[in-house]
Image (cartoon, rainbow, N blue to C red):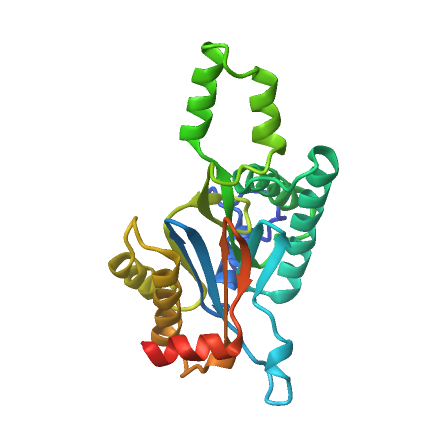
Length: 265
């Protein structure tokens, strides 16, 4: 009688896949819907709070988190696994801060975070069962090119550029970026993402509603509309978590502000 062969997390199946990573990805896809939209002046992350019981205080549930003062994240999938991923991310950010005196740009952070996550598929008993969205800022390529041109004209010392890219505040010279990372450590960057249940329909909705020049205020409205439209059941303001990150900092929307957004739709 044929029996399914069990493979470890570090062994490829006969079809060339890591079954445990595929199953972890399925766990992320079965979670509550979360969306992210990159605007010209910021990024919005929004997620549905999944309440396990009517006895649970919904105000105690959080779905959008701060990794550091410049990076926010949300997830879809197993909350316990995400908590571990969040702790790893915060450690990366704090270690970077101790060395350079500032928090990392989002692209620098994602390179290190994806490396740590990918190593978990080799060393741990199983991958994390969640998909994550991260949002933050990085150094503008135009600013770096202008600085390099100044170096060639002997107007700027090369050490000054290196210090500013890794340790300067970069305000006014940064651009927003949105990332998605799956349990295997695979990273994608884009203008909009949807993860969790109904993610395909939500992704199509975001592609139709979003443009490359959308502003963060409009992105907040679009994200709230996507959650309301493609949630499994009707959701209220207290069941939606929304946060934005701009050059001015991170803003978490209150229940009253979310309610006003839903009323305006």
